[in-house]
Length: 132
View (cartoon, rainbow, N blue to C red):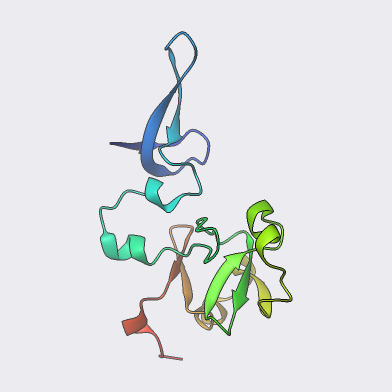
């Protein structure tokens, strides 16, 4: 599979060539979709395993989006505005806190066992937790 820059999300991912009905290359698209973790190159498996994704629909979560943090499950979910997740749970059911990582300091983000690197949201690996 080819690695390149997706023309939709503008990130370096596994890409598939988008072609028109005349088989002319039109644009490069994420191979599995922009929000699918499988589209992210697995050059560093540890990094891939720690990318923050919704525990319900597995959508890759971005720091600029509102997300739901559940202390009960110590997990993150898409916000209540995700069309898929909104059908499966209500925010009240998971007893969550809505957070936006771009509006938090580094120390506040660490409280949720999250970190931001290269505008990607990651879980802090379990062996590195507990320093706060």
